[in-house]
Length: 90
Image 1 (cartoon, rainbow, N blue to C red):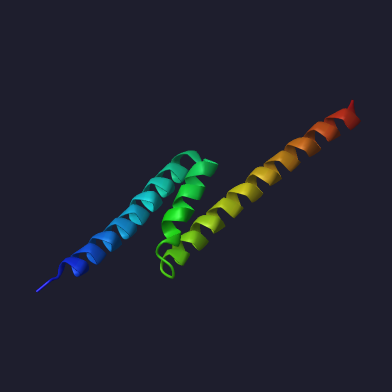
Image 2 (cartoon, helix red, strand yellow):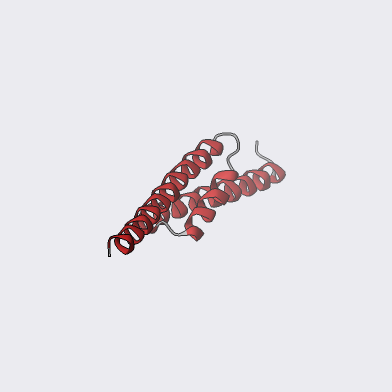
């Protein structure tokens, strides 16, 4: 038989893990669509509830963000070099 204390503990755990799942789902979906910084943070918060399994999500999302930041940096660097080579040619 389930006591009221066990029911309360189960409800609290359901709320905690359910909210973590919702946060990570919302964060990942919006991050994949918009690459917004707030979505990255929301997903990280959601994944952090599921330590150690959530650590895989954190590492994957961090890796994706790092690759995107490197790509943006290299594009800016290439654009800057193109602008300076045009100035030298003129």
